[in-house]
Amino acid sequence: MNLILISLLTLGIVGAASAIILYFVAKKFYVYEDPRIDEVEAALPAANCGGCGFPGCRGFANACVSADTLDGLNCPVGGNDTMQAVASILGKTVASSAPTVAVVRCGGTCDHRPRMNEYDGVQHCFIAHNLYSGETGCSWGCLGLGDCEVSCEFDAIKVNPITKIPEVDEDKCTSCGACVRACPKLLIEIRKKGPKSRRIYVNCRNEDKGHIAKKSCDVSCIGCGKCVQVCPHEAITITNNLAFIHDDKCKLCRKCVEVCPTHSIVELNFPPRKVKEPLTPEGD
Image 1 (cartoon, rainbow, N blue to C red):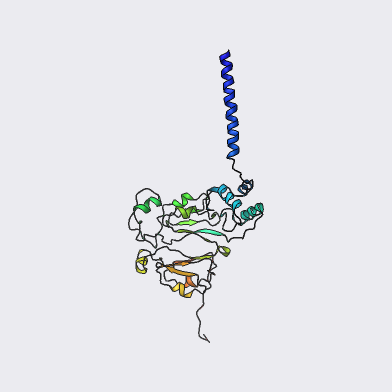
Image 2: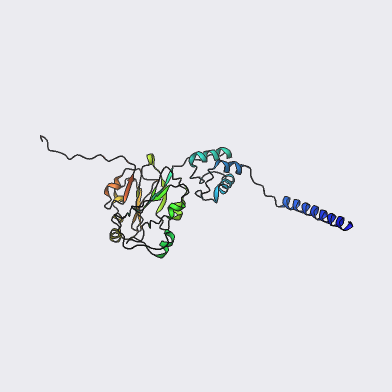
């Protein structure tokens, strides 16, 4: 009986001593966390997509609370409404940002970029990209195996089974950037959505010289520079034989679209152009 009492007493003393030690250790290493982090996290869409550049919504909330200003911080999924809510919680101001959308910069459909062989390996773009240049003569073009489609948590991008090119659903796209990171060819980028969803961009990433690019895909940019010459806003530059339209400078005048000899510059969601009627001699 005495042995049992001694054991219980010993266990009680050890337990009490451990509790006291744990209490002082917890006080010593206590890390204060601003309660506003929970409030900001609750205002976020909880997509945890990483589109903001931080590891999940919690990391973004912590960054917002810690920052002096919200400049450079943006939740692409929540958009301006979410950022205004975050600013209200923190007593800060935030500038509205233009809506953005993912854009696939490859027009090399089966009609424009004939297949030269058939890939029979693992159906992943990343693996195929590391094995060979692709089924066509264009080593820069889309592989069409759908890594971007798998990466999208919002069902906003699908590979067209006929053209073998991914297509973005503007209404579902949140600009999270998952498809951008998934594409090994770097064909997808986040661009400004534009007024009334109208935008112009070079639908090509081929950096080969003109005659080589044209031979592999008949809608490839050949770096001729005609678009640069006609652009009145200096919105187009050419680097490594490839034209690029800067959406922060482009005024959507569409002059570059008209002069592109390979039709590699595309215009989306514009009304049809007016057909110019031929002039007829007076009296006819």
